[in-house]
Length: 307
Ligand SMILES: [Zn+2]
Image 1 (cartoon, rainbow, N blue to C red):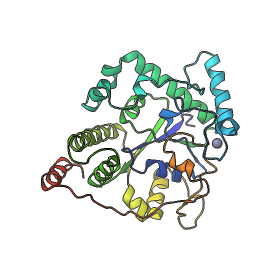
Image 2 (cartoon, rainbow, N blue to C red):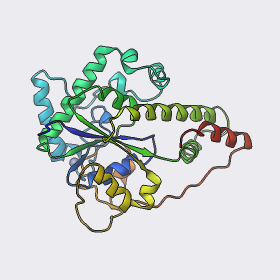
Image 3 (spheres, rainbow, N blue to C red):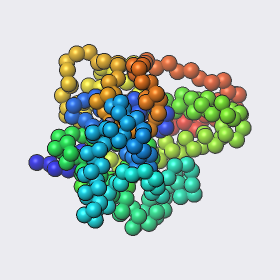
């Protein structure tokens, strides 16, 4: 019997629907969604509201996981430590640092961060996944929706977990438009920002695809998020098929999201603010922003090869 933890990594750009997609995965009884695992340590705060509705210090799930992790740390194992004021590892830092730029340009994480920090990173994360897996009696998939592709790249080095990867595909032109629109509140659309975001998205996508290609055949799946929104029943069955999970019920796909049975305190905060509102998967509605002729042509050119 295979005893390795089975981890599903979502490969997606920021604001690409990975949060909502991971919550739909987590609805299945054989799948545990942890959200962006990369943020679990740094964002840990006992006062945060978990998706189950309790504050983290009252949430049984995280309370028990924390105990298990502390036990393994006291045995001298490298592991996640859930306590306030925990600093991010250099590899998990947010924003664009010089090292992150080198990674984007194609340098290997080993070269950029050094063998030792990579090995520690692998050990710590693998131990964490093992603890989660043990907690669920090795019966479940674990979902990690952390965004940076280098995380997947690094963890692919380990033979101690079974990695499954779902690439959440978006139309990059629409994605770029919504990124630019989001910035509008604080900055002007035209100018440096436009070109910077365009170049960054180009290289991020290139990097993401390169890492996705490294995942072995049979362990990876591409899901077009627009299709998922428009035909969730078909796309969701495809995903369950890929994971060899049978559907929880034979009923039609339910667009309502039940999050109370999941335990997530990291990532997109809008989920936590919708306390009494239902979260519903809506059909896709793409609106493009008006750009100058030159900019439109440039965007077409940059994303030409990303079909
Ligand atoms: Zn909880």
